[in-house]
Image (tube, one colour):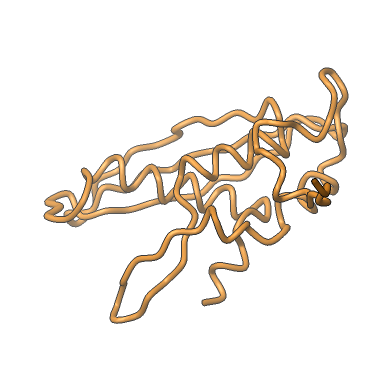
Length: 143
């Protein structure tokens, strides 16, 4: 039986890269979150006649748990404008520099006739966009 080397992204996401109580710099955290997403965590869907790859919100949470243990998430605002539900969320990460946060919005038609409901879809979008502001899956937006 031969042993195979395991790369950082092949390790189970529930194994953190730091020990309990040890803070890392935001640069290190962003560097880790900016690593390419493992293909096994990407999903595909058709949008606007093109197939796009995306990271599901629950996988984004696992990446944040792995690279930024103790991160925090909050729903900051809910708006309804022109038949659109717009949610603003904030992700906060505790690091050696203090607490660093990024906010983003997600929107969905209030009269949704597709998968999911408007609030869940808007929240998922906002969470992934806020995480992208820390580098997570940012390369996927280049598609």
